Length: 153
Image 1 (cartoon, rainbow, N blue to C red):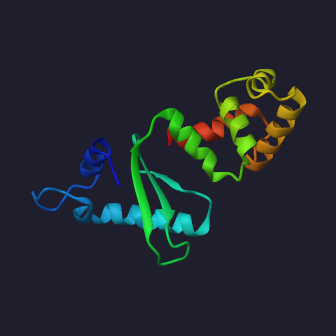
Image 2: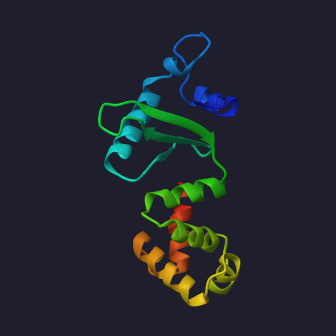
Image 3: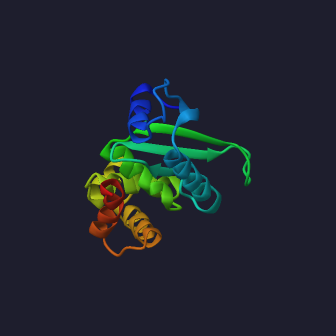
């Protein structure tokens, strides 16, 4: 599945061999390599998204749940914010940890996160410590830098 803007970017990245109207079946071997990499990531890790270019993301899901099955692929334009949020998918965050992580990425303090989510500041501090451990960093600044490195790469 793809929208028109994303398809235009795909067509520019992987031009068809002839002047025929391009469709997903006529995309070059370059795209097929990305699809292979995405399938491998889906089969071996929690990663569900690949960055194809500075603007284009490719998200996948295995439909059959096992190797060799069908794969759903979605192409979408990625803003810095959506790409940063997708980077969080690589970590096994609980739903509440994800909420806290998103607010930390926005630059909110523990107190501001606590107020926004109606939690105690101590609870937010505990969530932040768990997030930092899961992302394998020691500070909030390192957490933000690591997530934004995905966006900037």
